[in-house]
Every structure is written in structure tokens, then in C-alpha cells.
Image (cartoon, rainbow, N blue to C red):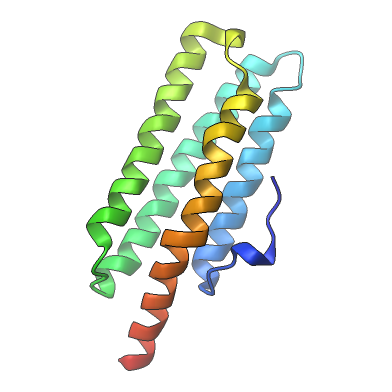
Length: 135
């Protein structure tokens, strides 16, 4: 999973945070290849979940500030993502290596992030930019 310019929203704060999320996902995938992968994977997933919460709060602050009309729907997407990541961590802690980290990350986290950025985040960033210009 690599960051590319196609994923840019045009909001440097949001884009910098997205780059960090992509880096954290890469760390999770990398941790899954080590011999002591369980501890490293749990740590990396925990960092990802914590960072996602902080990042989403930052986006939600922009939406609140600009009175973004799709705020509730966008926040619900954020809440669902965090819940699924936390559920995955808990499942991994219980079941361990019976879960394929790479498959789960690819099937959910990577796909979700890319789709979310390309749709909801780009729309929100464009709205915020227009709002700032009109002030």
C-alpha cells in the first residue's frame, strides 16, 4: 500500500495525516512477516486504531467548523472503521495466527481507506476549501 498523488484531497493537513495512516498500515503488514509477529502486529494495529481516531477527530473538526452538510454520514463512516479495526484487534488477540493479517488488511483497511479518501474525503476537502474561500 503506497501513497500516490491520486489520493490527495487538496487539504495539506488531511493529506499529511493520510500519508501517516498509509505508513502505519505498511508497518502492520511488515510486522506480520516477522517471527514475533503477534506482538508487533498487535502494537502496529493499536497505533493504527489510535491514529485513525485522532485523524478522524481532525477531519470532523473541519466539518464542524465549515458546517459540512454530510457531517453525520461522514462521521458514521469513521466510527464504523474504528469499530471494525478494534474488533479485528480483539479477534486477533483471541485467535492469533489463525487470522491472515495481510488478507484482512487488504480486504478491509486498504480498500476502505482508498475508497473513503477518493470519495468522502475529497468531497469534504473540496467543500471546506470553498467554504474557506467564501469567508
